[in-house]
Length: 284
Image (tube, rainbow, N blue to C red; front, side, top):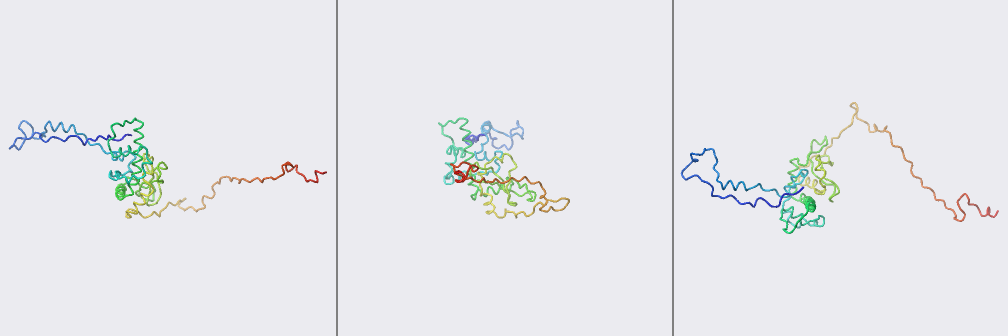
C-alpha cells in the first residue's frame, strides 16, 4: 500500500472575482435567457475545473484503511514534539524519512527511492506511527479521542452471551512490537477476545499497549460496567450436573516413571561383578 501524495491540492490558485454581473438596475436575468439558469462566467468555470479535492493527510489516510479502525488520529503537534518521540529513533529503521512521511513533509529533491525502498519506508512509517499511537492514547487528548470511539462501538462488542453486548476496548498483551497482535478487552467479564475482522487481527498489539483500556476506565469511571456474575450452568434433562459427572471419562494411560539405574562400582582390575572374587579364592 502506498500513502497519499505529499503534493497537496490546497496550493491551487483561487478563483477571480471579476465574473459576469447583471447590469445595474436590472433585478432579473436578460430576456434571452431563462430565469432558472445560473449565470456563471467563463473565468469561474475554468477556475472551478482546475480545483481538485484536497487530498487527506497521511495520518487520516492511514486511519481510514480497512483494518485500522482501532487507531485514532494523532495530533500533528504531538508528533512534532521531540520529547514525545524519545527513544523511537533506535527502534524504527529509516526514522527520519518515516517521520517526514507521517507529517507530509516534502522529501529532498536529490533523494530517489526504488520500489523496494519505498515499501520499506511505508512499513517503517506504519511502525513509527503505531508506537507513537501507543504513547498518545494514554495522554489526556488521546484518552478523550479513544473514549469517543469506544462510545461509537468502533472496537466491537464482547462475544460472551452473559455480557449482553458490552462495548470492548483494544489492548495489547505486550508492549514490544512483533510479540502479539491486538485483542479486545471486555471490562464486564475482564476477558480478552480476538477482533472479529481478520484485518484487525493482523495489527500489532504494541500499537495499543497493555495500559490503555485500564487507564481509560480509571479516568472515566462512569464507563466501567459492573462485573458479570452470571455464568452458564450445564444441565441434562433440566438437572444440574454434579462436579463428578465427568469422572467416568477414559483417562489416558499412565506412563511409568523413569527409574534411575544404580551405578555399579567395581574395581577395573577385577573386571565385571560376576567375575569378581575374593583374594582367598584367587589364591586357591
